[in-house]
Image (cartoon, rainbow, N blue to C red; front, side, top):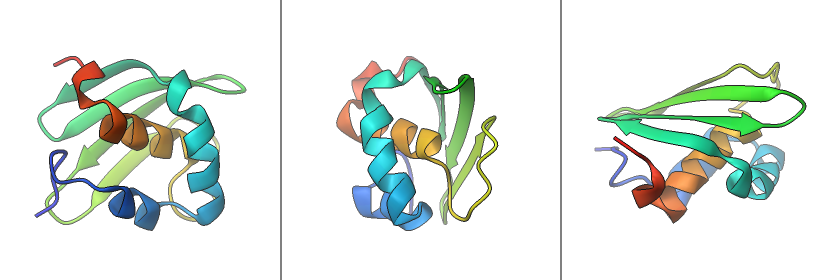
Length: 95
C-alpha cells in the first residue's frame, strides 16, 4: 500500500516523464512552504511564476495538481520536486 512513509523514488519516477524527473531534481532546493496533512503534501515552487502544488499519496497511486500550465504527460517537474523533497527531508514538512 502506497503512503508518504512507503513512497520511493521509483514511485515518483513512474509518475513523471524522464525529462520532468530530471528537471524536478533541479527544483528540489527551491521548494517552499512544505506542509503535510495525513496523506497530503503541499508546497509552493518558484519557476516562471510561484506555483502551488498539492499531492495526495493514495493507497494505489499518486494524485498531483499544480498551478503551472504543464500538459505533456505524467506530472510536472514541480510535483516531482515536492515528492523528491519529501523523500530527501520529510522532517522539513510541517504538520
